Image 1 (cartoon, rainbow, N blue to C red):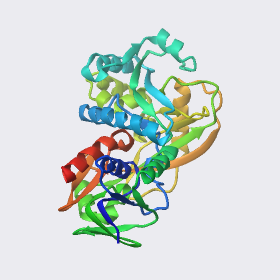
Image 2: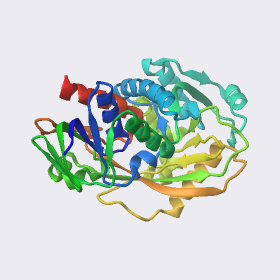
Image 3: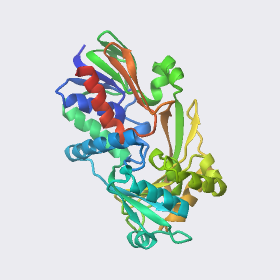
Image 4: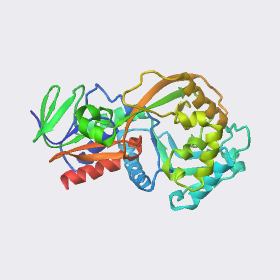
Length: 370
């Protein structure tokens, strides 16, 4: 029976963020993960640390988390593959949203590009009509999630964190965390249980309306071009709160409801992130339910690819990988509450764990340890 200051349940990005915050305070940390490696939401996403377009609170969290990502990437040997993001306006209503956003406080540091500048900066643009314009944000970074999470865990292990893989946790009582292979003595516990929250804390999950969001994503073969940053389009402007809250977003949504109702019904908005080999991670869609749907819809993938082809001239269109991602959603974007005197449940329920988890982890550890 080992003694630790903190036991963290869950080795996804939220759990690792709490482990990192504790280690930086000199605490002894154990991480307990039910699977042999992180295999859920944290490794199935774009690896996109999104700042621009978040809500006011979300933007502040993402900026702080991005600074931690920068430090961790250097120390853990995690490559940052892209910097910045460009939102291409296909419609004049979208360009109006970008102009309004850029003129406000959340547009700090961003640049508006007119159609000529957009085409010059992005010769791979393939719009049937000239782009109405674009917004360039320098704030974002992008890593390869499926590689970064294992590297982060390995780096934390080399820093003294004890990992217990393939061991489901059952509960924390007093100072004992029970798991499938024994008991860990710890002064405090954090349950970063993500999609497993409903099994461990069913009453909280019911009260908070925790359910699953399924994403369909793909990887396309390497391209002959290099994107200046992660690319997004009009549909993203009605999904991200910082854009969607602009008064000018209402006319854009009305037009999209007329022209792209099929995409809106599936929660599709196009993001294209480029890998070191030139391949594109592309998505995504959003479907909500109580259980994980195991079956992907070919029509949804086709809509995503059609939307991508409307903004980028692809030099290769072969899909080399397809997968589904799942993350928890709820009635509020962050569920964090006491599940014991020295235990906290922390679930990011907005699909923004990669963007905000490091800041959330710092807050939780400060609350537990002062």
